[in-house]
Image 1 (cartoon, rainbow, N blue to C red):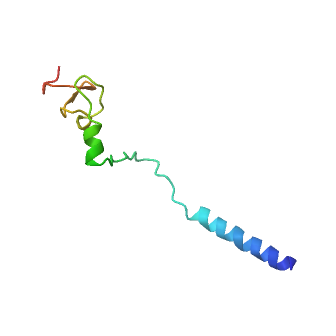
Image 2 (tube, rainbow, N blue to C red):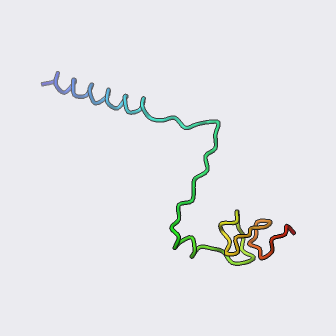
Image 3 (cartoon, one colour):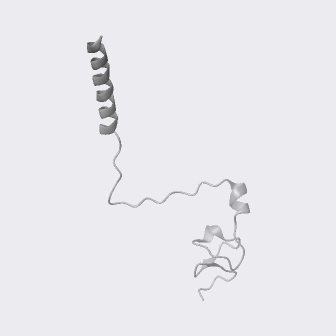
Length: 77
């Protein structure tokens, strides 16, 4: 009976070792940006008004992000 327990423990350890061995490694050199996956409803609800802070044009209701603020004009100020 002890031999069966020892064999079962050995098999479990081998399976766990195989899982660790096959796990993907993170890529060191490349930086991956996560894509935005909002539904059209939430995209429309979450648009920011003129003067609000922004990171890119898709965040503003006017679709114009200038100097990290939602803008009304096309020109760079």
